[in-house]
Image 1 (tube, rainbow, N blue to C red):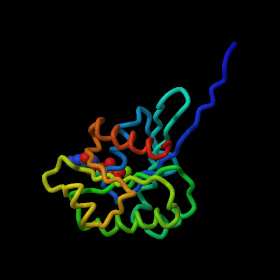
Image 2: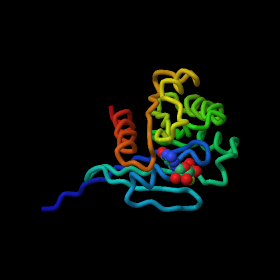
Image 3: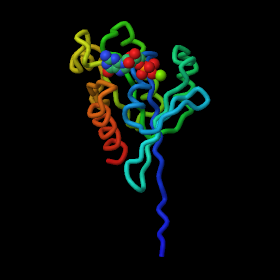
Length: 165
Ligand SMILES: Nc1nc2c(ncn2[C@@H]2O[C@H](COP(=O)(O)OP(=O)(O)O)[C@@H](O)[C@H]2O)c(=O)[nH]1
Ligand SMILES: [Mg+2]
């Protein structure tokens, strides 16, 4: 007798400023990644019953903050990854806006701030980013190097724990 296993797909939005490392992050963790209607997407099978789908909004829209706000307002996903280039403090204000938008519309949805490009000597330390940007304790700030599997895996596992805790 065969059993039918229902596969659950969990969608995670990967957002952040252009060039922060979102596509690199998705490429590193997902064996299958591709562009679909401008969105960069990646699939990852966690086990027989759980699949993750990472979704990066279209490149052309990433500086369109009204579009991004409306997307966040209307989207219904169980998790957000906000990617931050730790070497670019000039973008930190925009990152805070993004986090505030997510928290305003989805106060209960898990959200992780990824402090990327940690291999770069100019990168801000995660503690300084948390303090400097006034990130609340409810949002983890995780150091990352988006092209190194172990870092990306660590962020993904933290996300899963928050979603399924
Ligand atoms: N040094 C360093 N460079 C990175 C890292 N992640 C991404 N990059 C580089 O940053 C640039 C933008 O990355 P990309 O993934 O296209 O950013 P996106 O626009 O957010 O999708 C590329 O040249 C990447 O190779 C990282 O952790 N460290
Ligand atoms: Mg990209």
